[in-house]
Length: 252
Image (cartoon, rainbow, N blue to C red; front, side, top):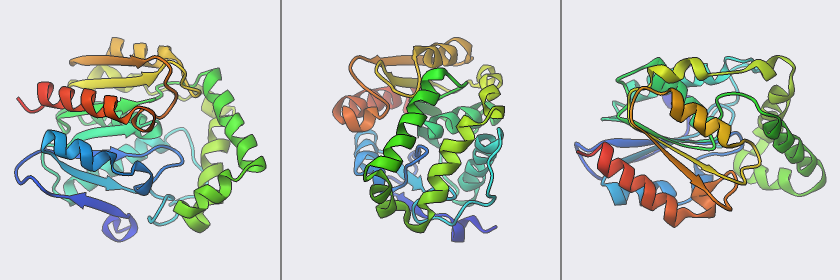
């Protein structure tokens, strides 16, 4: 495995000596689907930006193994740390959406002191019925609408494997016991936890579990009328709150 050859990366180094914000996409995402949000947050905070397609997504190589188990996000947190070291990313700050948010939490807890701060959107620390309902609704859309063709624009021939890796894994009996709360108490870096009150994949219980168990400063941002993708649904507000958080708790 050569991560520099296997993983598609977008790196914006505009501010020498400043921290780097690393963006971790969701279960159907990739670099391109972040649009211009990372660059805008980088400008607001005068931070550098690092975005990558996880294995199996976008321009990166296919999955390393065909089947996922309950440890797949822990393995991705380990890979994230390899990337930080390989690319010599300075004072890294994590911004993770959905699965990416869960990976950010695992990495922050498993490698305390490695990251300056973390921001999560719609992160999960355990499985809820709402999560499974949301995933199963997506399965219906995948089979009855143009969702598959839309995803193929970004993931190409990896689309089928990518979609079912997510949809099937979360629906297995074994995955109902998935839980990463054991990592939370070791998180000492500042944390901004974002979630919409209409998130179709999880409830406020996720946010409260995170806020209540971490050891460092934790800020809760629970948004009325917002679903699972706040940075797309209300980008101006998320840019404002994220930059305020970084400027107050990281760039001091």
